Length: 241
Image 1 (cartoon, one colour):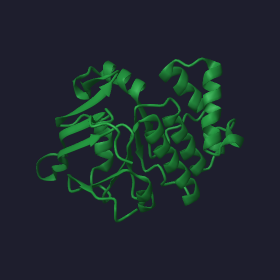
Image 2 (cartoon, one colour):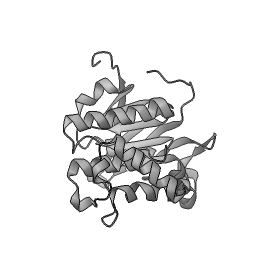
Image 3 (cartoon, rainbow, N blue to C red):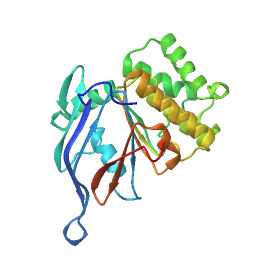
Image 4 (cartoon, rainbow, N blue to C red):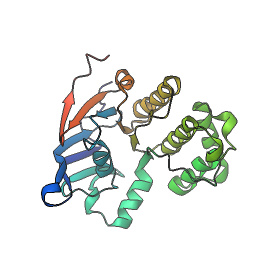
């Protein structure tokens, strides 16, 4: 599904990120430029260690690049994410972004439902009743209706992954950044998750960037990028659909 607008909601412009010093210095991002549009599910692939997670972290406002810009739409205007103060940047992320991390990052003491409720209350000022209703609706969609009262220790890896995805999507963010969202899932649940991410992009006009090694995702995405040796290349999808 093509973008419905010609204006990107998020742009990475000539992003550079290096690690190490002297002979050990390694450029992970080499003047990488990427545009994300509302309504698109974008897949980023590449070999292990190619900088995919680094690019995700830079674009999402979690890791500062050595040079380059990240321009993101925020309340109807474009802002340079790395020109914001740390407090402004945190506020920007709270309002606009949802994250799916590889290690789930769930709170051990909270139930599945509470993991989502806290995001709604803190991230979008929902009332307790509204937060509970929306959390329940999202968990139902993810096939977790029976697990709402369970804490992470009582959930399987796949169930934890689906809670993490529900948490990222529940506040209807403008941007979702998902790092290997299907890695802990069998394909039946993996497909459910990718379809949910695609629906969030297409129906809610979110910009969604997925980092993955999972080629089974390709038929579900709108745009496909490949990152290798610090260089980003947009690749055609036709061959994979």
